[in-house]
Length: 179
Image (cartoon, rainbow, N blue to C red; front, top):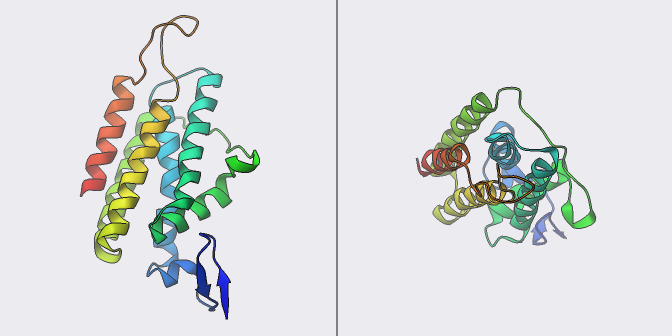
């Protein structure tokens, strides 16, 4: 029997979960699907902002995560669908909760560490195209978040579009994902 999966592709109905069909364990799938939201949170927390700017960053990141559902990569499309199902779908007006870690630097270091794990996991289990698309997508999420609202300035005038701490997080993430 054929059905349509979360990514809109026709698939055979089996008793196996989607992550198993893609070759991952439950724990590995949790790492893959949790990382996009974690990247969003770490990128947003890299520089303290007002609540309005933090919401703008969160919305931009969630939009980029949501866009992944249309990816040509079956892995990215499936991960994005799972992440949006968990965090909220911006296309229907849902908003992800804004998470503000108590220790932003520690949280960012943890996210970079998980990105290193994901790079090794993708090298071992994913196709080269899926791995490259997933890595690029995560860096795009970070780029969207850090570019969504300028920091500093007065009454929205001046300030930096991307701060040094945001740039550092984005660069550390890209380096970790490169393996």
